[in-house]
Amino acid sequence: MAIFLCILKSILGYLVLMLAGTNLLGMIVRGILPTYKKDADGNLQLAMDAKSSGRIVITIVFCVIAILYFYALYHYWNIGIVVTAAMLFLTRIPDLLFEMRTGEKFTLKNRKNMPNRPIDFICNLLRWGALPLTWYSLCYLN
Image 1 (cartoon, rainbow, N blue to C red):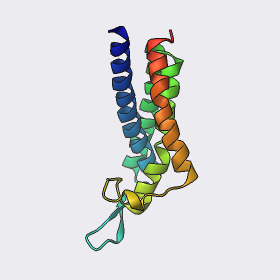
Image 2: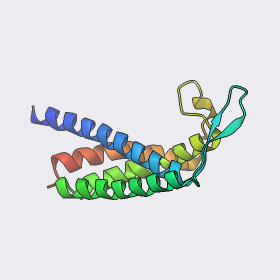
Image 3: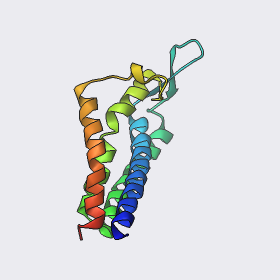
Image 4: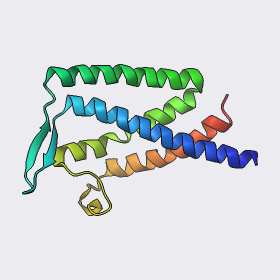
């Protein structure tokens, strides 16, 4: 029963770390680089201007929140969870940059349009590699 609870805790922790890291990274990167969206005709239009003072303030605030996020993970858990969170945080960058550049979100319908570069394969491998690291960090690392 303890092994089952450990595996369940690891999966839930992985999902929470992925959700938190993806949202934090999205707020930071979207504040630094311009974001485009497709209009009804399929043309790219600037969705958010990264140069406005409000976007700069929000980006700085979310950078501070990201630093506090990593500090809290280290303080309340351990270095393994921080490494897992950093892996999930950084492996999202190529997908996010693709979304911002093309204006297309990743869905099952447009998965054939997604790039298939070596960096994407490495990021997917690291993203899945974070799951056993989460398990080890939560169940065996003190």
